[in-house]
Image 1 (cartoon, rainbow, N blue to C red):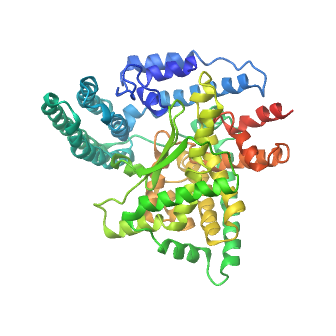
Image 2 (image 1 turned 45 degrees about the vertical axis):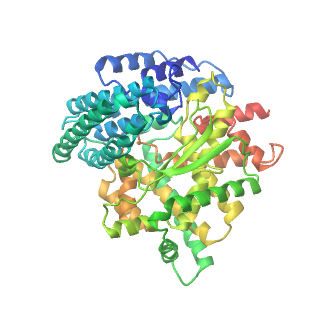
Image 3 (image 1 turned 180 degrees about the vertical axis):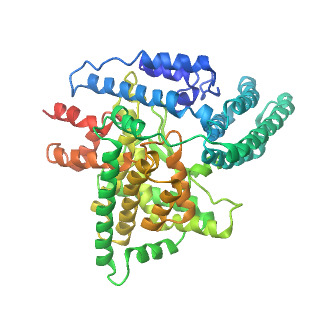
Length: 538
């Protein structure tokens, strides 16, 4: 592993689990929770500042690309330390970090005393982690909206501890069962106390989640390596919305001149997927997407990869109205991704469940599966691992400009090569309008041009999105780790389209091999790829 990546992993157990680094003693993911004390953050900041060197290598070389990626990693982590500060400002961060650690327990080895003890230690450590969280999270720093998101996440976390973890006792050595159950009950009390604290922050929290124009533009420049400002992204967003709207109207007129695109989309959403069939529907579509990728030779599919569809953990439901893609981690031993689908909330009113079923209609599932699995995020993550040396920082580093840009580029490729002028293409163009609105909402909310409610209304009015999904989307855009992220879909897609046009005809073997080339250097800021690929093809 690259020395800087190893340093970051050593300082951050959350990052270690995210990139697939295993504990060298146990051979399982680390069950440590992150420190939240001043000494820890001072050590992390020192490590980052030590890497703030000027890039020296010639543009277009792999050394230059690696150096630029190190600088981008430094920029985004300094933003987290100095601006985002989720341990002080985002109550949901505690629920998510704790849920991530608890679901990383190696259940198959809990019968071994040393693994069982690690699990018990995690239960005890979790209580202190939440207690420290209550001390860190004060009303002056916490946005009320983030406390609302936390309340839902904590309900899911409580369900995990009360339900799923109770079943783990059956796997423990008999002499540890009583102690595990005792510690689990203590943790449930700690979760309830933390929830009560968050409920108070819903009322009293006066923190601000808006990052402001200067910070937003700084992330575009330093993290995404784009020569753009927030103002330019805002303007580009509205131009993209207008263009997507025109394309949508044109295709709708071809398909059915007597009905608007909104009426046609509503008909497609009316073919809703029953809540108890979500997983089966997604699994079937993943299989279809794999066959389409192979049949059209869109990208090389290695033999030893796989993508499984599973339910999303309940504690993640609040900020993910449809689901989450957990792609192959950079240092994983197996090339397997997990496509996690958000189940319907059993406590939700019938109209919300109906809206969730409409949002997961067959046309939507088909449109999103290609983006997420084949030839989208899953397969891109496989190429990331296979195309980067383990000792290079390019193996560790991933940027959303590349990852999400590729996903949206894939949607365009599928419409052009597979769907043609069809109802499926109509749904894809409606999604293109939605992604264009992300540029507007992302920049608008974080620079004060739009309020939260205006953003929700904009999504519903412009795309016909149901309220449940619209609010879930906007909640996601407000998160501490999301300023600029929603904009990377369209911005990255635009660069991939430009690279495709630039390189078409210059790569032997057709489009599939061109796509292999685009994915051959990991997931760097895609704006940097042009110089590297042109150097390699010269």
